[in-house]
Length: 543
Image 1 (tube, rainbow, N blue to C red):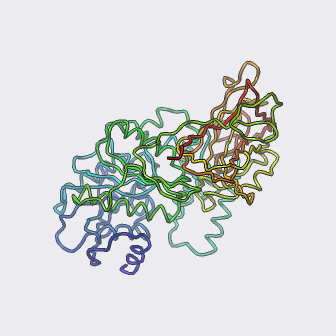
Image 2: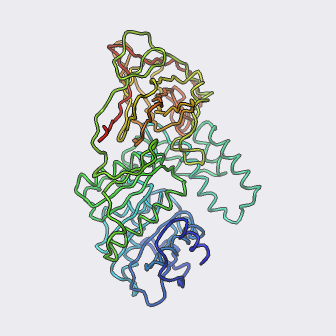
C-alpha cells in the first residue's frame, strides 16, 4: 500500500512518514464480557512495539479508507488498533446503533492495556460514527487515554437524529444504505450501484416512514424503527446521551467540522459544554459538508498534530488559537479565542413586498402560502449527507409558490456575520401540526442565490398559538461565518419544509412511523409593529 499512502500523504499535506515498512496482523479476536468476538487489526512500525496506540473503532469494515488511515498513522510512529464494531465487518453480535459502544469500547481499551506491546499511552481517532464511539467511552476513560480526535461527530446523538423536533430522514436512510452496502461487499457491480440509487430514491418518498428502511435496504432495521417510534422516550435515549458527562471529561479533545455538516450545531454545543467546564479542547470549522475530502484531510492533519503534542510530547506544528474558522464570502481563515466570538445581534426585519431591512416594519398585511405535503418543498443543498449538499443556487427553489422570499437592498459595505443565527417568526397556521423552515442566502450581483445556513422547527400541539391566533416561533439556524460583500444582498427564505433532508410534516397527529394521511396547510408570516418577524444576525464590526 506504499503508493496509496504516498498519494494520501501528498493530498492531505501531512508530515512525511518515518517508515513505510508497516507490520499488520489481521482478525485478532477480542472477546467482550458477553462472549461476543470483535475482529481487530493491529498495525505497527517494525520492532517490538512500545509506541503510543491509536484506536479506531468502525462499523464500516477494516479495508479501503480505514486501512489506509491506520497505515498513515503507523508510518508516523504509532501503533494502530482498527476494530470492527459489534455486528459489522465480521465481528459477532448484532449491530444496534450506539447501544454497545461504551461497553465494547471500554473492554477493548482494557484489552489493549493488558498486551505486552502496550506503551502506556492511548488515543482514539476517527470521524462520524468513529467519533461517536469515542464520546461513548469518554465519560469513564482509563487513565491511559491521553487524547481524542473526534471530527464531524457529536456526543448528542438524539439531537442530530431529530433536528428541530423533526426527523433527519435523508441522513438516516443514506446511513442505512452505507451499512447495507458494507454487508453486501463483493456485489459492487455497476448494476447493483444503479439499483441502490433507485432504492434510495424510492425510500426517500415512501410512506409510511416505517417502510422506508425496507425500501432502501431490502430489510427492516430495528434501531431505525426505534428512532421513528421513540423520539420522546427519555428512558430509551438516556443510555446513549453521551453528552451528559461532558463536564467531567478530562481527555484533551480536538474537533474538526464543517459549516454544512449535519453534526455542526450539536458538535458546537459539545465544544461549548467542554469549554464551560474548563476542559482542554480546540475547534476547527471549515467550508465543508460531511462527505467532503477537504474535511478528511484537515482532520488527519489535525489529529497528527494533536497526538504529537499529547502522546509524543512534541511542540505543535504551529501555534494557533483555540478556535479556527473559515469565513465564507471572504474565503479566508481566522483565529479567535472562543466560540462564539464576540458579536452584536442585529435584527433584520421581514417587510411587505419581500423586503428585508434592519428598520422595524410598518403596518401591513401578512404574507401567505399553502404547503402541500404531497408536493413537499424540496431540499436544495445544505447539510445533506449525499453529494448534493453544501451551498447551491436557490433560484429555482425561490420561484416555488410555497416559499416566501425577503431580500435586502444591495449592501453598501461588507457585512461580517459570525456565530449562532436564529429567526423570530410571527406566524399563523390553519393546522396545529406544522413545520417552519428558514434559510439565509447570499445573493450575488449576478442574481445567484447561495444558501449560507438554515434550520427547521416542528410544532405539534396547540400551545404555541397566541391569543389572536398569531404565535411567535423561534427557528434556530445552523451557525455560520460569512461575509456578505458590498454589492451583494442578504436574502431570507421561509417555507414549511426541506424534504427529504427533514421528514415532511403530514399535518396530522398520526405517529411518525405510521402516518400516511396528508393535510395541506395555509401559512401566514406577519410583519407589523406588533408582529415584527426578523432574522437575528451576529454582526462583527470591522477592526
